[in-house]
Structure formats: C-alpha cells, structure tokens
Length: 113
Length: 109
Image (tube, rainbow over all chains, first blue to last red; front, top):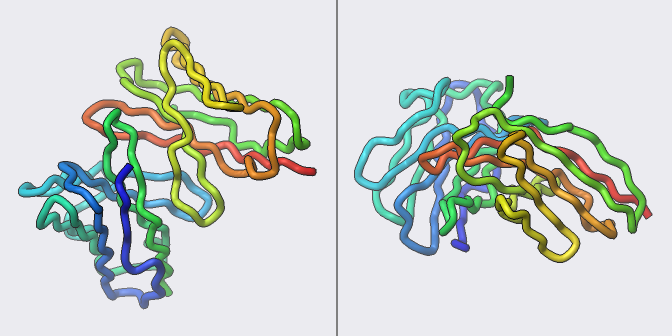
C-alpha cells in the first residue's frame, strides 16, 4: 500500500480564515480523494481529485468552499475557505489500491474557533 | 434510508469471546466491500476485503450475501487490542466508497 503524509497534522484557526491541507503520496496515483470526518461521525467524501482535470465534488460540497489542487500524480491540496466552527473536523486524503480499496493519510485535525 | 447501515454498539465483550458485526447496504449495484478498523484519533485502516465466497484472515472472517445485501464480520478469540471502531465500507462504483457509521467494540480483561 502507498505511504501517505498530510500537513499540517492539526491546526486551530479563527473563523473567516482559510487553511490549506497538503497530501503527499510516495507513488504516482491517478485518483486522490478528500474526506471529512466530523466529531463522532463516519467519513464523508468531499471530492475526487484527478491530475490534470478539475475535482469532482459530492453533493453538499462546492468548489468555492473547498478548492482542490492536483498539480501532479503524487500531490494534492484541499483548502477549507472562510471557515466557521461547523468546519471543525478531521480531513483525510486517500488513494485507491489495486482492488478499489483505499488507503488513508493520517488526517488533519482542524478546530475553528 | 442510509446507504450503509451498521449497529453503532458498543459491543462489550470479554477477552476470548467471539463477536459478530453486521452491515446492510442499499445499492444493489455495489461492486466491492470492505471492513476497516479505526482506532481513536487515527485514520481508518483496511482490515479485510469481503468476497462473495467469504474470506478468512486469522481470527477474522468476513462474509457477503448479495441477495440480502448483507455483510458480516466475525472476530474469534477477541483480544484487548481488537478494541476499536469497525467500519463497513461499500464501493458503489467509480471507485467511490461509502462508509457506515461504524460499530464500536470494547474488549475487556
């Protein structure tokens, strides 16, 4: 399985500001995924990021709020824009394995005050 | 109806016990199925894939019933280290995974 790192591991931010989360994979992958896990909840897919094309967002998530970059096959960023306390969550990136399973980064724990 | 449903638990069992988790999914076109384990404040980690013929990995056995849209995970001889949340995960197509809310397991001495 791929080795995935995320930066930052955690952050505390003020409402109205933005945070960019980085995801780095140790091998080239076509698709990368961004998830959110709110406190006490399971994972919800935010968007799928393909290199060279715009990200595909799930219902309830919009590009203006969660812009994503995918400049190459090993890296992606997710920005949480104009944050509010409701954005306090763990944000995780993932990549697909050989049999459509996914492997996750360690997550970014975001607290918005 | 949720796409993937699990009993949230918690399941409290003593060491050495056998425990079973169940999961149902709503999309009959779902293509592949997985159990993940998530420890507190950690990312989910793949425990095992679930095949139509059933599969076993040590103390863990997973089974799939496509007709009933039902997935199960059996853990034998529970260890303290098995305490975690177990997530039922379904691939609904286009590599999209849908996660259940998870079943929490607490194994006590």
